[in-house]
Amino acid sequence: MTSLLLAAVLAYHPSVEPRLHRSWGEIAEAAGVAGVDPELLAGLIVRETRVLPVRGGKGSGCWGSGQVCWIPWGKWLRERDTAHRPEDLLDERTGTLAAALILAHLHRRYSRGSWDRALCIYGCGNVAMKWTDCVYSREVRGAQKWVRSVRRRS
Image 1 (tube, rainbow, N blue to C red):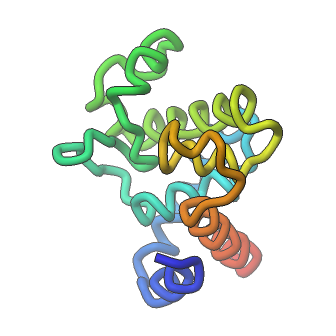
Image 2 (tube, rainbow, N blue to C red):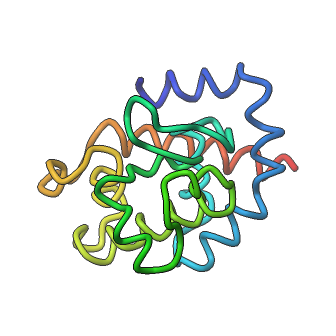
């Protein structure tokens, strides 16, 4: 899905905007704890789940509003006392915080200062460590622009 297509889906999906408003407190709090731009984190969550607080990981193994993949991140999240089992990520606050902490970790550790590279790694896995740009980061950036426009209107 291109950024333009994602923006169109968001513009015509009336339930996303109210969910964003309801979830903004958790998003801003998690972003503050992790040191991530809250609109970027919101863009990631909009891209992943359209701000639906409960998304299970039956097929993909990804959980919560940020669709955190438990297999590669579960131990890391347990060590930080953020989540102890995948189902913990279904709690909106926990899932959002986990996504923010992982994105911040990827930015600090692997991205060479590029949030777009961190987004590529978050969305595409280790294969993206050599990429500077990817469709996933463009989709999140498109959703971030939509979030910014919604926040300005309110």
